[in-house]
Image 1: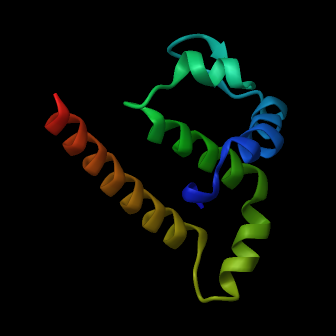
Image 2 (image 1 turned 180 degrees about the horizontal axis):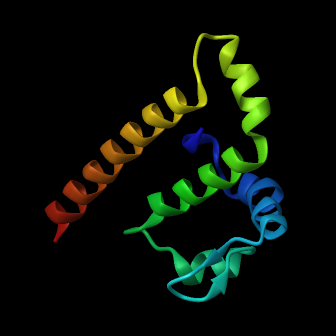
Image 3 (image 1 turned 90 degrees about the horizontal axis):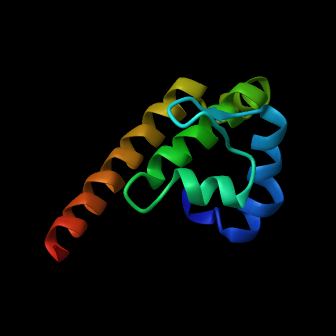
Length: 103
């Protein structure tokens, strides 16, 4: 899922969904609804936090649909979230390792 989130998907799907969901960064007191907001709130060091925000918004808005689809494959939303969290943690660790190696 993460690998298919290109700039066009962000512009056409993710940001409109975030805008309608009225997602707000509480630490900065800023709404997350546009490319500019994204650029202000996220950088290469915390990019995976953005994906976690997107996942939570998708989960809240589409939980019944996702549960039905996942049930067809013998999975649940919590199974998928656990797998995604594990993958994001692995990617974060790899990113931090690569970042440390270049500095």
